[in-house]
Image (cartoon, rainbow, N blue to C red):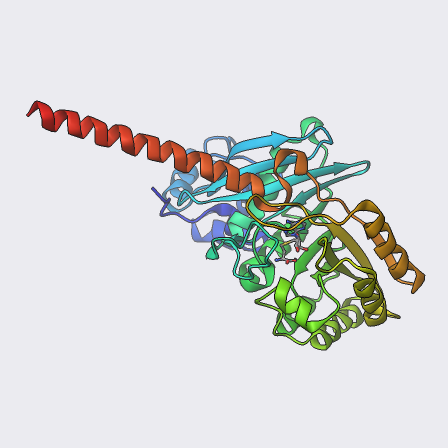
Length: 370
Ligand code: SAH
């Protein structure tokens, strides 16, 4: 059953003092409560031992602490861990922890499914089911922080999981503010990056938040026709307009924009595209992430040969554009790019089918007996 109550993780940290007052308490109680939710990471009201029993009861009548929980996780030898998070209505999303030397980066989802339907991506296969609430977006980082042994803090957040973040901007903005707020998780804006296919007006609205969040734009093609083929839903936006929005973002925030380019053998990875990309981005204050495609079950897309990848990168670098090859993380555990969730969902569907069959068998047996 979906919980009918909203979660405290969906209350903005700057609203807790007012909330305490509404509940007949002093403002300082609100400061205590916000600490329990985001810093001490209580998951039940009972755990908030220094709040009066009466207050805990009044809170429990109006809220749950969190609205989601981790139901599965998988780790790969490289240290990447993928978590399947179940929401109050039973739907699932995926959150990934990527530990690197000094960083512990969490990759979060913003929607259940995705409306963009990039042809090579597992997340859009069933379209968009729904937006995540602000609390559901925020909580993903809390779930991962709960599981970091030694208590090292999550240092970075990348909004690169399932969904198109800019299609859920109101809830995303609140989540960004909560992560960033010192009363929330206190993660610096420069350590949080939002990845988008780059709808210009939506990029402008991100810039208008007035914070130095990082911006990554999924480009994937240097030509309009090719982009329309790979990113059908966003391919209608002229590339010049995508680039102009990226430029405005740089002007407003001072942050160099990252362009993501998934390399797919036989489609967008030849020297021709490399030259066109170099031409397109020459002089642009950016960084290019070249991502060899992570093959998805049932989809025909393959990685280019290693020398083709190197050649592509060399051409871009020769044009004076900063570029690195980034291998998708967690491909050993089917975690890269929303795929663990798909596997788990498939397993669950099989379980349900088995249950239905058993149920039907039982009913048939009863009928026969009758
Ligand atoms: N919708 C947003 C954010 C989620 S996707 C966006 O498009 O940016 C995050 C990144 O993962 C995007 O660059 C996307 O193109 C990439 N991605 C999706 N499926 C992939 C796959 N199978 N292999 C490699 N990268 C993939």
